[in-house]
Length: 77
Image (cartoon, rainbow, N blue to C red; front, side, top):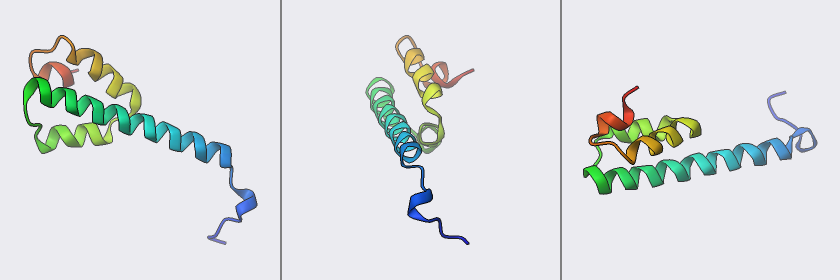
């Protein structure tokens, strides 16, 4: 069946996934605010990158932001 019984749900796994999403979303919002402070308003493409990146990538971008002179320095690979 398409419905999953409540007793079959892995509550711990669901909680871990939710916590990971909360960390990722919080880090993305923080980085977005810091980038706007440093470089001005962000374009839609930059916002989309922040919205879809995983937590590790957001942390890497945050480290780069500290010494970056442009958004290209932050997001360039």
